[in-house]
Image (cartoon, rainbow, N blue to C red):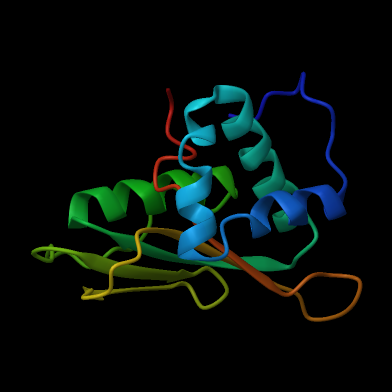
Length: 147
């Protein structure tokens, strides 16, 4: 999913790209740019670089539907090299949903969501320096889906 022909980003450059999605205002400002596949590739690469500098990542998905949230979780989990067979709750949830996946605990939590944010939060977790402890997002739900 990540184009190996792109120049490799430094951790600092990856962090700068990811921080563009920190607030709702910044996220709205980047919407048009995300239609460009090169921009999406750089964002995918930035996620991979940040993840490689942490011990594990916790994913938080805010989506309009259960199916959309599950699809986003699946694609991000696979991109971050977590099992593709996630233990999601069997019963779907009507309306907007929040899904939290913690690979360290092997847990997945889902509930109805009344907030207005949509996207994926990637929380990079490290036990010690020089690893990073940062949360990035709300990133696009479909970032790692095949085009």
